[in-house]
Amino acid sequence: MKYANAANMLPESLIAEIQKYVQGETIYIPKSKTTHYKWGTRSGGRKQLDERNNLIRNAFREGVSIPQLAEQYFLSIETIKKIVYVK
Image 1 (cartoon, rainbow, N blue to C red):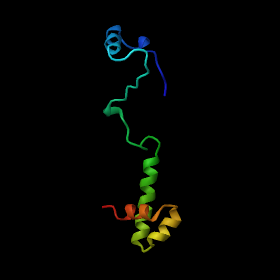
Image 2: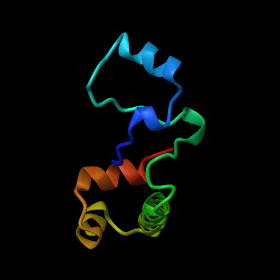
Image 3: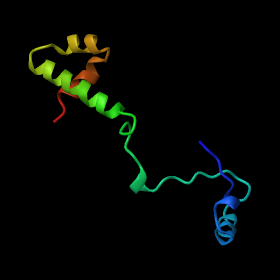
Image 4: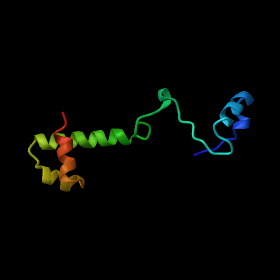
């Protein structure tokens, strides 16, 4: 996380208002919800998991057993069940 000095970024009136609540502390200001990305959308991790899960569902439909899928994809049987039985 990158830190910035508020005095270099914010107007004095806003700094004075913030100082009513906190002084000399480090605070985190989150991004607005409109600029927030869901997990894995920027890195491509979400897409990889979705593709893997589709492969698992297709293999299950073609008759591959849940224990076989768990072994093949290095996942627990319960995780495979969650993937194949999702609506």
